Length: 205
Image 1 (cartoon, helix red, strand yellow):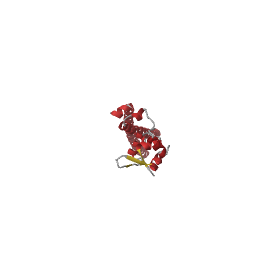
Image 2 (cartoon, one colour):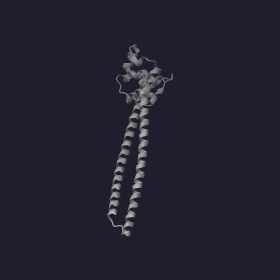
Image 3 (cartoon, helix red, strand yellow):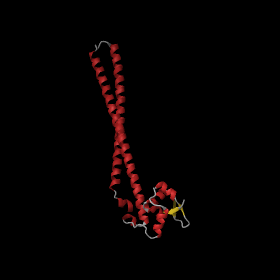
Image 4 (cartoon, one colour):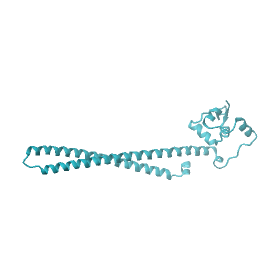
């Protein structure tokens, strides 16, 4: 299978030369160097990545006759600038993907913490209700029954200990929620700063 230059690969695939160069730099498209230390790409490798729109004979005949298509706009820029634009475009796409992933993770973590806090509040409410019922029963009991009073005291202490543990858990959960909220705010600020940067500032900054 024959090998073609970057320019010929662009004509074969209908892609721009900066796209082909970006693919070789990222490792998506394999290439080798010829005797003049220029990139050459196997046609089969090119077809693996980009469907061919022309044959090798067609594009070489076109180039030989001096009828290579004229490009305008971004393709008319210097090669190094075009390559930088292509690289920055890929980085921007990767950054946007990362931003979406981080946002989804923060939303999921926050929902989990909110569910945990809701469950804890429900548990605390039930424990408080049990405590109130126990106090009501003690009030109705005769004060002369010292043995039974002692049992109630032990029950109350056990309930108080349980409630104390649950309140500590609630405090821990609230601390985790506050920390998660701070992290979410930090990510939001970072995302907002990234979006406010202009494309050309990234290009030449």
